[in-house]
Length: 108
Picture 1 (spheres, rainbow, N blue to C red):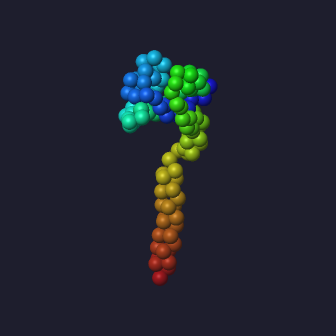
Picture 2: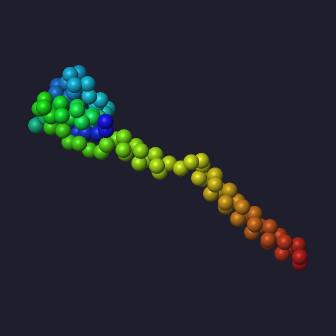
Picture 3: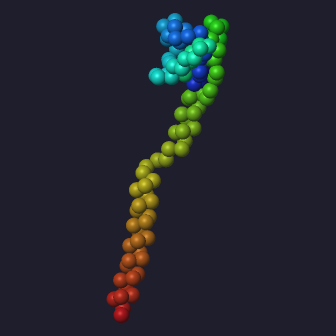
């Protein structure tokens, strides 16, 4: 079951605390924002939890599927050390140029 990054909106600080105490939601640290109309926090929740929160009176904004986002990020991670491969290629080219220059000097 996918896990989503969500923003939960509620009546105030106590409602945000109840996300953890009552509903067992994993709230992301230091995301509490309060204004005159209520409060909001960012959290992680699956579909069933989102439905439960909506039923309890919270407004929930669903963002990305964090599992899918992690898979996409991992696809961009290469195998090995690309910097070492680039350095080796530059060093190989550098040696070839130096060697040919020395060869010309040796012929003179």
